[in-house]
Image (cartoon, rainbow, N blue to C red; front, top):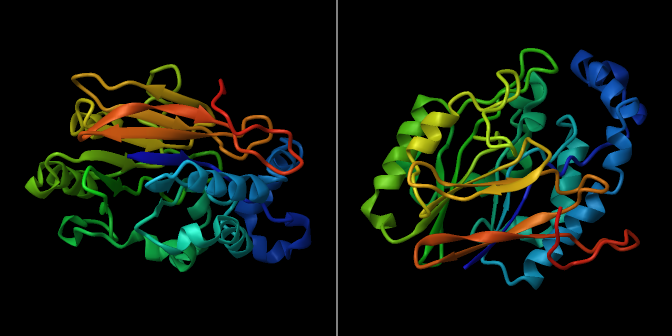
Length: 296
């Protein structure tokens, strides 16, 4: 079986065409990152790149497509709509597609209260095993073929202030995940657990308190060995830490649409085990990227 995994696509609106009053103070602060920090320029072609990754999923004959959060720059309606449009028909069918929110998708209290992410992608959060849902529909389970299941977790929380972007799964979801891992109906299936925040950085270390996944150790303890993989984003590096007896495979998808760092994983599963993955670069019209595997 084959899975395509991307993350942090950051579809970015023209913020200077928006009403500054409606943007709110959190997005005013973010304008420095967009302009001086170069984020708007880095994601100028994000819609085209995301569309190219969606096409590549079909070309790879992927059994399932996974996007582990941060679809938007700062959770505007137009950014969610841009992501939905770029994904096209792939995002219509939860049997083929799993998408979870990242911290940028709940950047403001208003975007969270209005369930903006769910308005565009809520149909992909329905669970095949709803008895294991614990917190607002998470964890949800997607059965893929006869040999795998994808499990979605929510670690993204509304930040108290811009710059604090740590994540928390929480005890309720972890208890639900433990029940999923022990469910006899899933015996013999590989479990691909999707969460936005990283259990480990690309250096194999815990992330900082203001940026990391606060219950990363608890997550990894529930998922030992090569039957399990955690697929995440948040950190804009693409890497793979192979499974050990104590923890799962960990795949960081990087920022899949960032100029100069475009890419995604193709992850292989066989006989109920995660075998590994290969990095690929999407072919973006006019962008000069190739479709083959490569070092990213």
